[in-house]
Image (cartoon, rainbow, N blue to C red):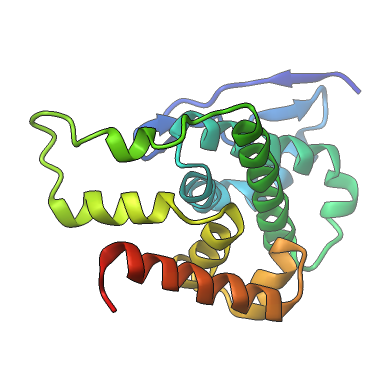
Length: 189
């Protein structure tokens, strides 16, 4: 089944544009509309989640695109599922964790690069935000995922476990260790 990519204008997420749900099989308008109805509402949340794990806008956009591509390829079975949002979230989280692991194994980003970089001149970043970003960058990928899913998106520990493909106890461990690291980095004991 040949695919064509169609970019949508005006689908802005943060400062970046994501071609939301623009994949369609030729001549299959009903499937395309159903697909867009399910995923379009979730694109911003997926982007925010990917950005918090990958810490790079371009990589986050790629992660969302990969998630949407996988969703489209699995649309026949995904359309029949009760928990489509959970499936999309898990695919996105897994892709982000794998991508970050691959990037780190290739030396990207350079260790300490974020720590050495100060706020851009005239950017108006306040010190607390810079400190939080620096502390957050020191977390492991799974700690970032757990904290982002649980605290930023409000998912329960059990839901986080499903998204991350691990046990709830493992998620609790990632949360505890991640929060301990943040407290230590921010000297908030």
